[in-house]
Length: 137
Image 1 (cartoon, rainbow, N blue to C red):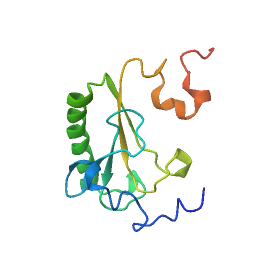
Image 2: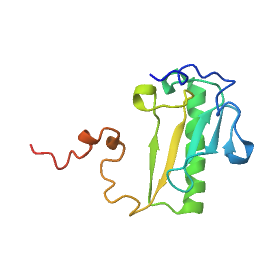
Image 3: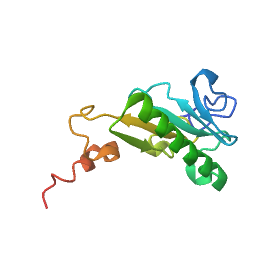
Image 4: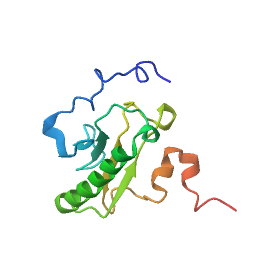
């Protein structure tokens, strides 16, 4: 694990002091935020307000707030960007690729043709495991 990532505190966390100009929607326990390094136009993050590293450490009401925001943001992105689908993801822990240790749900609008072959989706985090449909049996 890279040092600095695990030691990030609320004071250092970009999600604990979000840029209000990038907030798309908010509730008492969570907010939706435009990603600072978007994969596609409209790429949003849904973040609990409490500084928590893992989805599995959230309270039930925090998870519920995040899921309500997911529905609201999806509707907004459908109107604004007319995607053909969505990739949703949480990198939970450094081994899973989490670089900001404050849980956040990626909501990535996807369009037909944005990838030559999108099959496998999130499975591509381990490329040698992704193309399961072509694997010889």
